[in-house]
Image (cartoon, rainbow, N blue to C red):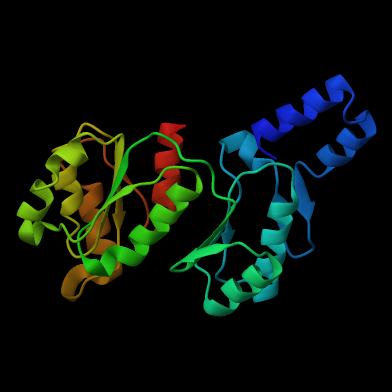
Length: 245
């Protein structure tokens, strides 16, 4: 249940459209619902402004489908996300809960209405796209439709500079980069907007599965970068949403 749904319920009680007993019954499930294998957090939207997302790895297809169903059944109209889902998990979740839209390994039900904030998601290379897609889908689920700048890494810096005005005018920028992770520092130096950097595991040689990019972003001389974990496009989107409230 989100804040808007709670206000509607309380208003309905006030005018007599919903009985006190019915309201109590609906609120009884508000803190969480115990499914036995999971305690689904229905209170998170009130605390954080974002509903609980379902992380696919480690769960059976049936468990993914059941948690999505529980989230959709609660009062409110906020988005429901299933992330890092494999084909079996995605199929089970969509069969039990029609209407989920899939992009890569992320599925979304009930996306929020569009918001006006301008967010740009930049990728250094094509290999970074799966992580950027996870970020973009999560943002879009909450109403923020990001602009995308793809394949603008520092090996051909003119590709980024051609869109420098778009980056500078953004309300927030997400930079997704593997290899040496230098794109985050470059973007952080040309925009006043908050920059969230996502190191990816793309690379070879001494990239160490994204550790090199992670350390480079953490050591950036572009002050104020926010850095999330390796390949964590979902976490980058949530960081942006918290910044934008």
